[in-house]
Length: 272
Image: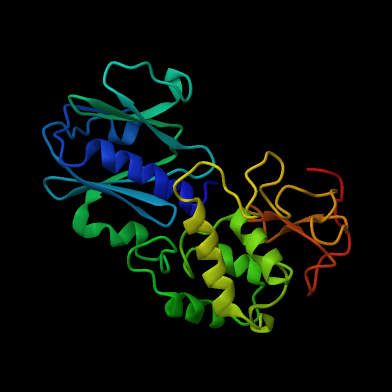
């Protein structure tokens, strides 16, 4: 599932392309919204909310999309060839006289009154990349579940919105705690949240998600997707295991030497 910085960047590209423009093309290729038509409405803004995207148009309507594991928006000049997947994977097209925004494989598409947006995103915690980011509130929500594993708590979008599996494991490596450490045992909870945001802020303007400071291929991450390889700090073999209950479980990567705290005893150590 895309991290919040990916959604932030996608929303920015769409906003830059469509903001203030009149929609001259509107094609919903999902049965539930097959008759919806946004042509003739001006785009007011495109904003991210955690891993959700909100496209607000004139007339008090909001197009809500969520990428889940497969979706993406692509923006093209009008008349240009579209890339991103075969035509049958296109779920929605929005266009102006000069630009086209094409949604590929987007599994969640809603069209609601703007005043009803809270019904779709009101449950989310503070947005790590949002203009109204509230670190104290995010920390408070995490601290309210002291017995919960920090890895699961960080991924719970009701606590803080936008962090995904990559930034979860990389943040916890840099903080020196395993994903299975209980929230109440994390000594520097505020620093943990601040670091996750810092990593996402640093990557929001480019496709590469780098946490080590190195842009060289294969050197971008500390532990993410590096099971079976040597830890960049100590040389210990990076471990891999699942965390959480299916279907919400996620793969975790960690260094058993650099990170303190509980961890599964039976783990895969072969390269992922």
